Image (cartoon, rainbow, N blue to C red; front, side, top):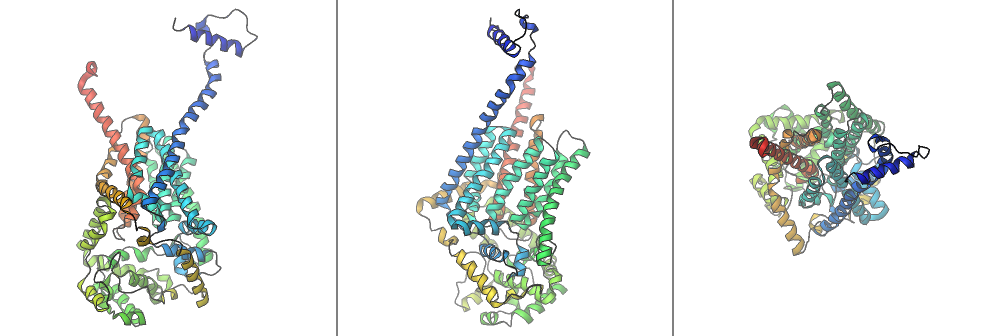
Length: 573
């Protein structure tokens, strides 16, 4: 009797579909079932698609609310290198830049995003733009994770990210961190889709998102290595896997080549970005490990001679009583900025910071164990210490040298800098804009106009100290959640659990998550070889680590359940 309704419905559909059929119906078992079902499939399919959209829309709305909630704790504020982005923006639309070096050092993603929104609507529109980008990027990641593993895992991912202070802080800064965070979320969603339905166009989209990451921050060029993930796509011959990776790489190269051509035609350098050789590993070795010294080798001696001949005689250096010993021991960020400009003046634009980089490498070679210990401690700090306590930990690990303390005391400055780098110089040398290839010759009036326009834009945004004058409740929320997340490092190894996935339907997604995990470690591992313990560099990649951790935990739990069922035997299972 249970089949009577089905038989009646089938007969009704048959009659509706073929009104000229004989009046005598065939027996139910002989009715052609596939055709009627095919006619009913489109409405059912549309219904299922509609039903699958509402969780994504709900996630988008919830994420928009999460951003606004974090705005009470982290008001929109200046981020790292904030003034350089504004200066880049003010010069981008000028025929001749005032700072040739800066226009090649940065990529245009952050300057154009923040600069254009600021011009159109000021900080309010910038904040709204970040709010929209936050919700859209993470909703896209939620949708991709939901298709791969289901709503529960995707919701857990969003929940963890919503409660991670350092990640949400990055989103409320006018800096590359917020745009890189958007790019990593979109890239992860694209890669999950490329593994789910492998095809050249889907992998080409991954290449486009890799290019978007580079436009946000030049060091993200390291993320292009994710094209190797094509080798892990399951169920495909090796030749097709390589074709998928080539599609991603080709899309990236076309876009990156167009940007390099822009730089070549406009600034005379066919490159994505110029300056990496000056920072890697010089930034870290000069500012934090303090391994550079005139006696380390021939490049170090040449650099010291240039410092003594060019920088130290300048009035601002003489006023501070800076000699060679103090210069290389200070770890002063303004002095390092002067080193970058000095490299172009003393050794030529064509040298591309090679002497500075060789001097830094000589410092590493002179004390390799100190350098490796510094990198190790940096990685330990950024993955296992909250941003609230990081400053004190960093000061304890890299203390201010006695010679610097003595000079700061003699100058009437606090012996310990209150925040950030240990500084003796008030700012980088007034002559640093003299660097350049000679391609442009900006007048003092043009330089002054750039500085004034940049200062007018910067005045609309509070710096860190101004923005973080919080009440007791927001401060308590921040500190409590930051302390709770000090165990973030424990989640990272869980990503390896993706290797345990045995479900054929989810194996590809697990491999995609593992590829993101490996790419994140690669990017950060290489980056921290040249910089200090900056949390903002890690934060944008947190979604990759958390996604891999959740996918790995799920795979390991599945293996445990499978082993338990096998041990129980067929009867008990």
